Image 1 (spheres, rainbow, N blue to C red):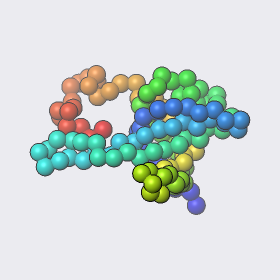
Image 2 (image 1 turned 90 degrees about the horizontal axis):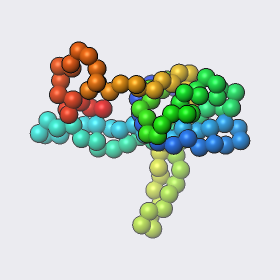
Image 3 (image 1 turned 135 degrees about the horizontal axis):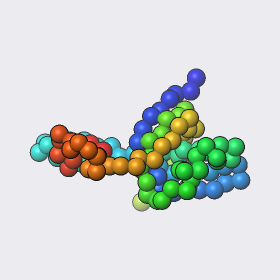
Image 4 (image 1 turned 45 degrees about the horizontal axis):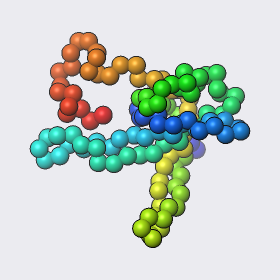
Length: 125
């Protein structure tokens, strides 16, 4: 059984392979500190897999400027790879996603109307 994932993240790179393309994305993990200020405390790494037969459905994503905020819905599978840092082997987790929908976030909340009722500096995204 597949897991479904929905997230908004940053498209950082599109890698081309013979069978398709992989959109390398990050999702920021935000947490409010003791002073009430939102901070990025980590990142999730997500590979969004677009097979060649799906290129027409996602050409707006594949041709988007880098970096771009993108909303993604799809099936996911957790993955990991080993890296060596400072002589120590570590496991780097990431998610692999096969999308059912992807949309570019055209506007930030700062540009929306009417004005938001929260201070955007405190927003967790």
